Amino acid sequence: MCEICHGVGGCLPGCPNAPEPKKIYTCEYCGEDIIEGDEYYEFDNRYYHEECFHDCAINLLLDECGARHGVAEDLD
Image (cartoon, rainbow, N blue to C red; front, top):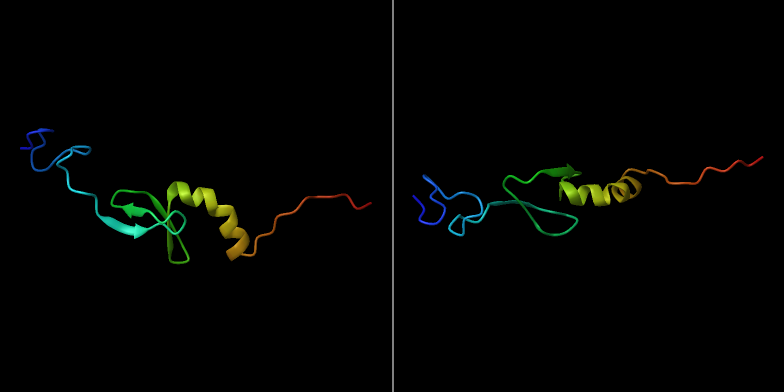
């Protein structure tokens, strides 16, 4: 039993005695670790934190998938 968090069979999350979470991937957008338990997106064999993917999804669609952005105009 942990003397700080009183976890039995391992420390509770947030306990200073808890082991560091395991790195699974590196985020392509921010460069930070995607750790065990994090939600992520994978696009073209590149991995992104969920929030980072939302931040850069439009750019990915424009740059990688040929999406277009425009302004509608009436040419008459």
